[in-house]
Image (cartoon, rainbow, N blue to C red):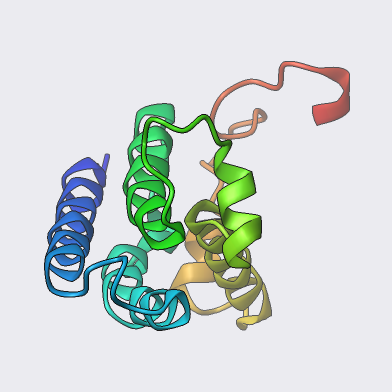
Length: 148
């Protein structure tokens, strides 16, 4: 079984490093919000999103990715961490889409890309793989009636 935890941790670490450098070089109070948001979309975000189509995102990863993103966005918005402000308010104020939504969009596009492939291509074969002689689906059993 392939584990993507190390890859996810490395990508998050790269994101943190780039964001930290940007916070030190481009002071939030001296740089325009629009400039900081554009630089975030061009520098650290692609480093984080590279290969995210294949990640298995756990709750721990979700919290850490959101914390890294909101750390930068709060400084961009100019609100201190002591202010009680919900992350969605900050994102709406800056008019950005959260990173986790972008990751879900990447995954959805990747799955649609695989579904458009011819049936003799290896990604499509792997996606539709079923063991010989097995009746059950591969993976975790279905839990609810809605899953059937």
